[in-house]
Length: 552
Image (cartoon, rainbow, N blue to C red; front, top):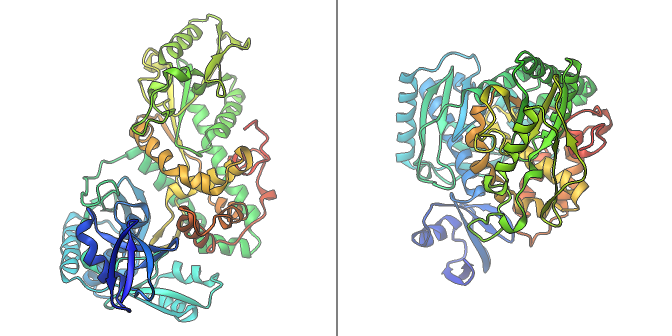
């Protein structure tokens, strides 16, 4: 018999060769949510594997990030099988997972034919039938040339292209019956695990809706976010037109010596978008406050500088205002549910003073602006005064800038709100998304190491708290923006690779961040690296890797 220790000091004995799934099913009544993976010695394992030695494990449920990512991957496998069954031939494989929506994925067919409600109803019925049958999701290792040949035959050209750059000679494929696919990461062992989902027709495609890890058994209705969707669709379509919407295509550009052109093209497109926003602002003469908000590592500071350059080119005189300088003193800072200072709460900002100063500026009065001393936890005045003239405009940056509670006394017609985020639209292949939050985490990891002395373990450890604050204080207000700006750059992972990999390799096997580090390292294996010296000095990416022409 083998002894398994879990959750600190609980123990269970099982025969040698027992699958982790069988062990998980025995202890499942002790958990509120479905166990989908096991973690042993910092490494994630799929449930079909067998126990061979006494060990200490952690059972991963869908209420955890790794567990929910596994659920989402498996749902895409289920979707692919159902589409395949309804089509009855290989044209079924021609669906594209374009990008994330609030609680799921937006999916289109490659030939872009419209998806009807009648079709999504049939699709849901077939998916539910597959769940009820509890069919096994099997994994097999094959030679990469065999996999590439198969994907060419069934029309999955992106997977064929991706695997062209694979260094390993083998690749793991998954199948449900006669449907075979490739996924970046693990899946659940059978379709019976995939009970919670919905599929609806949306725009010209469909939305595959799934639970969130906070409520793993609840699928919420889709709340359309039109502005965000349009920006994602616009970027995705542009990448597709340029032939750089998947990792394989980007690697082809690098291998073909075209990376410099790709960088210049991506930077030119961003500059055009920034110039367009500046023109919109200048066309509204009553606007005096440009309010910029976005989640962590979106490049807000560099964007503000570049927008200011464009505004100056149009005859305006922008003045930066950082909302962080209006923090309340440390003794007045609110605390979160864990008793820690909650610097991301709107209550951490002296909104009364902020509104008073902004109204005085808008009225033409001279104002002494504060600077917040983060070490002492108090505001200080260092002679920074400002008085606005006719062509002056305020460029205000802070996480609460879209929240009316911050600027409630400033008339709406005098504000222009901008939401900025690094919205990743390139994909690994047809069916494997790159989570937008991964891009921002990697950016932050590189910048933290360069400017704050934090290692990758520190950044990963703080990330869940950062994300919690974003969901609470930023995302609910993003659709109130006048403009949504996408700060992601199609080439950035190729540049960030050489910076991030050495940081991730520094995380030890005994660290709680080890499994996340391994996941990100596997992710970077897909990319060819490129030289950061080709990145222009005014690029938003320079805010993270260093060398920016701006003071960021």
